[in-house]
Image (cartoon, rainbow, N blue to C red; front, side, top):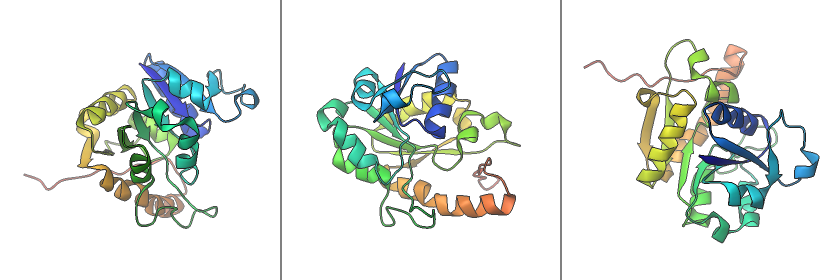
Length: 208
């Protein structure tokens, strides 16, 4: 599958390596591709070229600029393309959310109604995203979105990163992305307590 990753930071590069290893055709999108030539051997192009190349797009840009960046690509170019959103909008000092009464994923879905948006992978760091088996036991990855087929495709791509179906939890429509994104504040507290950022949570249901 052709996967375009918008962004060139740690998350975008990690996901690109993970999906490339699984056999997918990946391309990183940058606002300044000529300045981002050395990206660990990963191909890079402009945002518009990446969107045109992709069957699936991944938003791995800072959440406080994501909607503006996507608008620069254009609604027509994004129409009908699954967009997996892993971004979270935070203030410069990482103490406040950019979307305290909503979520970035909802804002993207509202701005681009013809683009099915699925929120996932934003409750962990980039290492855990692509190496869930490196954690000490099973853990949970969440999916939020209004389009069932888009979530099924996202689930298959998560499986390719090492997340079995038993670890994937569909928590409902796109409004449930708020819970995923708002976890960022608790994530930072846990990271401070652990002294490490590579960890995840596991949803443990009541014993039947």
